[in-house]
Image (cartoon, rainbow, N blue to C red; front, side, top):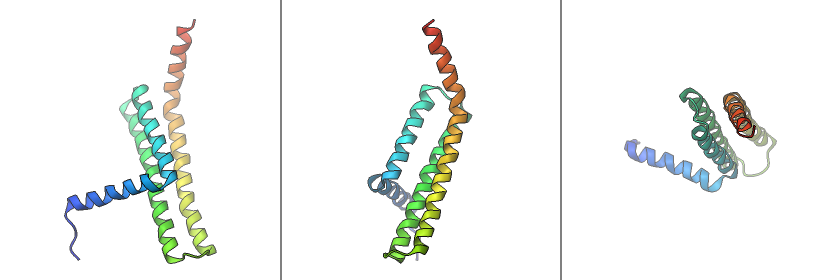
Length: 128
């Protein structure tokens, strides 16, 4: 089988992302969190390295969700009926997403902490 041209490969990949946006509630929630992070990156004027950490953590969560959905869809095709083994596989894939989210939250706390403290000091000075 011949591989498609590179532009078709990219189109297929982006179609997959748009399918996730359209059909998967958790991905929509995580995408909203990503957009909020983008706002905070510009609002707090994060240093490039801090912005890179936040963006990497955000994209890791989105990617983990895509992999989790792919595993779940494959499992549903292989075994449409309830099966404890399939449930175990799905739970493991969901666990990977949870761990990625926990790591992203920790990154967010570590990165945004200093910016929030600086913002609070500025607000405090305005009211004194």
